[in-house]
Length: 103
Image 1 (cartoon, rainbow, N blue to C red):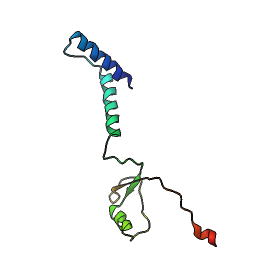
Image 2 (cartoon, rainbow, N blue to C red; image 1 turned 90 degrees about the vertical axis):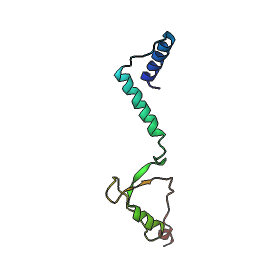
Image 3 (cartoon, rainbow, N blue to C red; image 1 turned 180 degrees about the horizontal axis):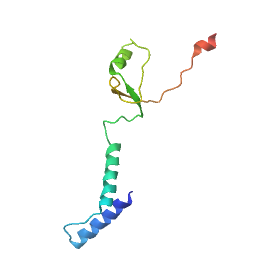
Image 4 (cartoon, helix red, strand yellow; image 1 turned 120 degrees about the vertical axis):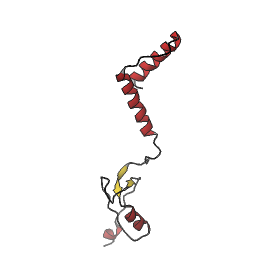
């Protein structure tokens, strides 16, 4: 756990035990604590996909692929005008091309 959090927790308990109504906190300690909170919030963000992000794709082309109208999908590393839907990785297995072996 972060040293700033441990220090602030000890300071808080000390202030409570002494009956203090306020506590002075260093801006650097507060910065560290807020950074830790942001990190935890990001980890618990439910809108974020659980799988690693591969890139961005065109939602219309994804729909066409699902309907069998397309055989491939172009994925961009950066979000763009038409590339607006996230594409995430899954545990894919390598597919062997058996047509070459049969020849």
